[in-house]
Image (cartoon, rainbow, N blue to C red; front, side, top):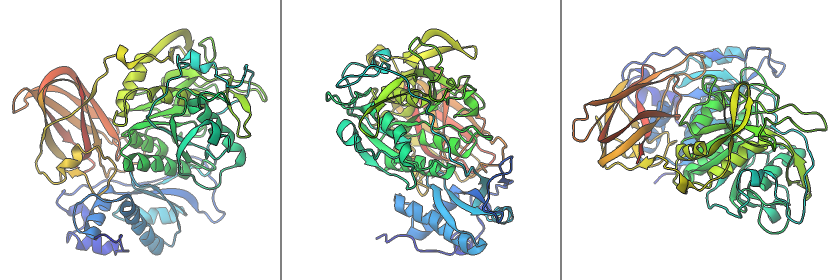
Length: 575
């Protein structure tokens, strides 16, 4: 019977559990250069040289620690995962004389603390640490502009609903995850369906303007009161970020991931915050961006493009300065009523919606009417509202097991040109149509997995992504896995979620290599193509498009020069 994890000696784990150091165990020697990454400007410190750092932990160490502590490879609970990371934090506190502020992420193990660069250099030598990265200490602004005018009545319907073809009285049983300010305004008890909250303390009272507005816009009740949302009465789960510092954003995204995993929920999420500094922490290779990638295993994730009349890739998520297909993530730009780029509001004057190659969809953002925390109506402009509108429309597709890239494909099928352009690219708006109009690849079951060993083999198809004690580990840098789909199917791609100990903060790309083979009988020896993931990240899914082709067997050959090859899930898509 489990009673929690005691505070074990790290040296006992490192040297005693396997008899040798981790880098020399059965996985073979994998020597990776690690680094401390500082912000490229003079950042805020505590007056004594201490700065705000993330400590990245090796997921294989966390797995070994939990196995050692609870005696086996059974699945761990969320509390056991937190306890394992906390154990490392407590040992670091003793060894380096620091205080641990918080566990920043359980899914991609990391800890937040303040210490000097000298301590950071020392900590980097610890074998369980894959990197140390300074993060912003300043508040991240909410992507909200200024109010405008709109007609109201007993129950107001924003122009955004008829524009997106959602003024139909329809709703959905799927959940909406809102990562924003806390949903604490009393008006929400009367005009929204808030089913869950997990808030950090420290939120400024005025910031409930933002979260209240979004909750009303996406889920306001159909009750002749206040406002009616895109999906009236849809269940909203709130993750209040307080002041919005980077470690808080990481913690709230992690909280959303943990809630989705604990309830076995595949849903939509929206984040309407943007970074105007350098580096942009929402980019694919920065702390928040990496965690968004991990969250996209379960959550179709939308983010506001930002409102400073610039390039969205500099302020929001993007992959190598562009959007990426089949990643379950979408940056959304803001529209005016005529389908052109949003040009802000008034009081004070606001700028326009950001645009560029990282923006994949556009939705209403100008002079939107929704709820004020006081119970009144309020009109406001900003891409903060475009992103949750797209997430709400995506929630109309599928059910609680519909994967994020299925919802992404649905949204892309809805896109229509408005006749306007931004930064030389056509503006494509999202407008709801029934899913019956489209043929969308779906996740396919497979009957058998053939792998070099069967330890934790069921983790590849159990719909769980973040358990650091339960994933399939090849024990080497290369491996081959074959999926038997049970019958010949029309395949469009596979999506693999990797576990990786590759350093995440040194600024260098860490590619991972795949070759796929198919056949209608074993062995699968017909080449389906090869793929290079340009920059791997722990717990981040990788989509590999193939064909489309008819096949029963798919063999996935993988090579990772930076880590043991390990997967927490493998999904096949097609018809």
